[in-house]
Length: 217
Image (cartoon, rainbow, N blue to C red; front, top):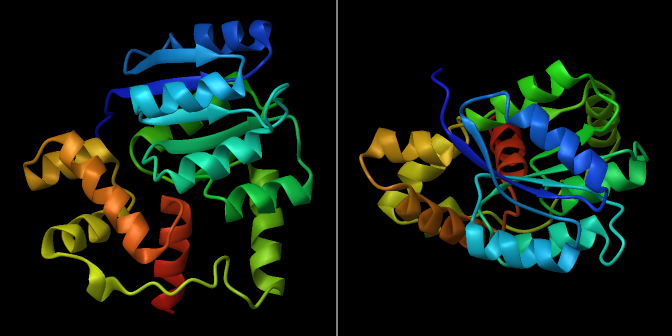
């Protein structure tokens, strides 16, 4: 699948790490960091103003916990792919992030080339997770019969256009690829995705895709 230019917002309160991540990301032509901040409060404002394709979000922020930021952004139906990028491999943090709408969970001690590969996968619509994290989530899903969310997901509530976009979302297509596939502008896709999330009670693409795959079993 072709690579798509992706805008990135970096929310992390460690300046040296932000600089290192920026330098690494800038080695890839189709990535552009359009905003960065060490403040969770400012991060929320930038996410709403800039509407980036990808948000890299740390958990352990000084002013506001990253998981609270995640929860707030999803309540606002922000359509960005939100990736938790942290040192924490605690099961509680991982499951909370998943429940609150994270599209991925990466650990800061991963190899630089693996980090860039993960970002490239995100940019073409793949769901990404550190290998160690994947095992924790799979075990959680196997041993918890309750679904990630108890909300009802009634696809019949969608308009024909929303249904088209829903079917492309669960195939893993990014906003830009959906826009190209349907011959519409990306801003229109984002508006439809926010409506889809609200109507179907989903917080993220990951949650939506997991439900869709489970419903087909």
